[in-house]
Image (cartoon, rainbow, N blue to C red; front, side, top):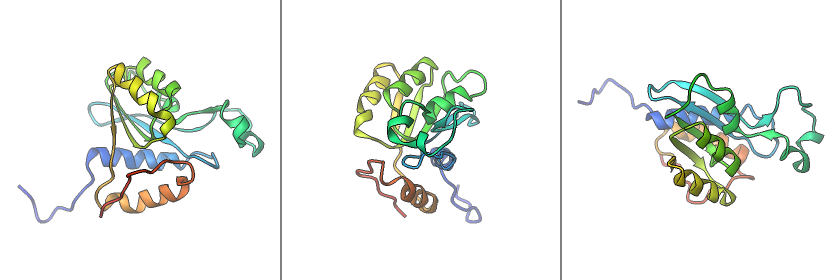
Length: 172
């Protein structure tokens, strides 16, 4: 029964993806900010991560240059796995960008059962196939509802240069 006194709230998937998007803002990468969170079956967040250098690695502008950062940055998905609490077997990973193949391997090895992502890159298509072959369900989350409007626009403004946004619409 609908209660006229209650307001609309985001779905659990929308809610967790918004948290992943907020987590992405922690990244200092000048080109691409990615966030990821891991959620257990009880809807508790058990891990968060964003793309960045390992603790102790010098955070200098020179190290953020493309030629250097690609071999030194830890991706958001792997950081979420590394910083998770307890077993993450059977969990769901929410990520703002579809995982690369190396992260997909870590996802499979950690026994994450589902990956929801907001945007993708053509170069990550093999990783989505790999995840499926290993029994991990993948789904691109399509933003709907007013909850996405503000946060999605801010996130996309910041990352639009590096993300493939084909077929992504934000519906009011």
